[in-house]
Length: 577
Ligand SMILES: C[S@@+](CC[C@H](N)C(=O)[O-])C[C@H]1O[C@@H](n2cnc3c(N)ncnc32)[C@H](O)[C@@H]1O
Image (cartoon, rainbow, N blue to C red; front, side, top):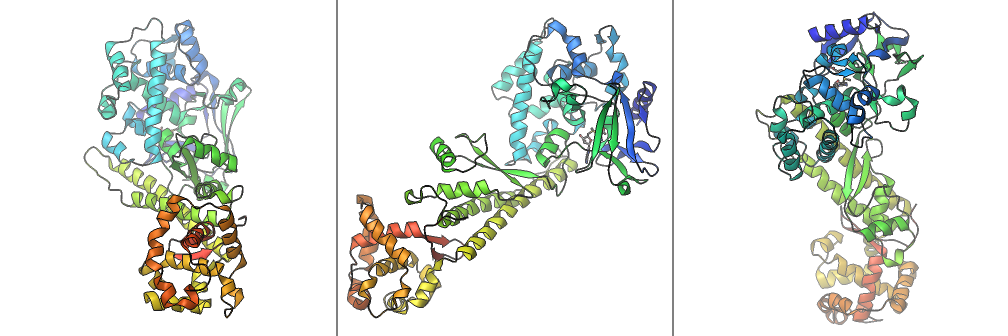
């Protein structure tokens, strides 16, 4: 708190304006926070910070000048300058100004070490393990690798700064994978070299969690939103989702903070919030070290790996894949308010399409695809549900609590996707009202009796239990093809689309040697017994093995088996909307 007071006094002495109705205090779980002392009815100009105390990339550029040899299109220079200000005892002079002295109160106030930034880069290995299998785990590794490379490129390109052996060794060992485990121990050491990786990572975390976009003060950076600068005091405000604020660069002299938050939320005792932008929990966790329970803007990723032909084929078919989709992975983003994106359903439909379904999404494809998607989502939910939290004296209760909420929010998103997939399946079945095999058995009493007599099947569930469902479907498809031979039966029992598909397949699809092998056993288990026992059904028309093979293809093309209850439906080949 003493450092906070010193920071505020310094800022005010240097021209900062802080509305008297705001004070700063520590709030459990959020650190320093801005609290309202008396009701605010208009949120204009509550804080104004003069440009003279900003820490900008320009200052960093002036400091490094021609000594800087590396490429830099991110925040490398400012991060390195900040690391120097924090961890180097010698003064840093920029264009004759002693920046170390000038910014001392600000730099002293900033978290004293990496761990205190709260960002997961500085978590213990045991804490990072708690993120296993989540998007945050992937981001953490990917970003850490990128920051290491960015740092090494920056420091090794610094003219006049000789890198220590330790630095060189760290980089080589890191690249070899020696730090895959053990990074935490390395990062726990006291930082005493401003060019070291821990110093740079600390500075990266400070910019990630406190900086503002340069575009605010420098129009030339409007397309480079990652370019950042620091505004003392304004960076003391915490974040609230969907709060409406604005920062204005007035007369190119100072940045003001303004809020149009509902005055009900600006009453005495409330906290004055900033907005860090609309962010899902992964971004909040990686950038700020906190997350929002029940975050309406949350997202999770379902990553699928398929070969290049499938990625290209899906695109050609018209599936709207994410732009970065490739054979390395397709990342489908599931959102809290859009748990089951259409393109994900389309992609799964595409994966199960048959040659005969080229060009359109049939209802069968949609239903079959959904069934497969549901099984993947179900696995995801179970992985989250069964995750065991291993805690020890190397896992802080705060981190455990945070990861619990994070993991729960992801489990909930996968569960919502699963619920949506089930709803969509029900909706499609209701909309297209396909003929169910259960209904067929009710209508076609002769056929059902034949199953009763030969297999002792009493009802549909019996068929499923005795694993005779698939055979029964094939038998009925062949019976349907033989419909002209059943003059006593009601012809409306035999739908034309199944008959027509049968004729079409028989005419156009060649029988392969594999087909013969596949159907031989099934056929032998049924014939000639069936035709001998129930000749009125199986002794008329064509019950040859060939027709069985054709029925197999017809079944592939026209049926969908609902995983929840093994109900089989016959679906016309038609576009699903
Ligand atoms: C820009 S600083 C805000 C000032 C900060 N509270 C401090 O003590 O200096 C951002 C940091 O504040 C904390 N923070 C901001 N908003 C928060 C929130 N809604 N919940 C929890 N922590 C929050 C996080 O530690 C974050 O990294």
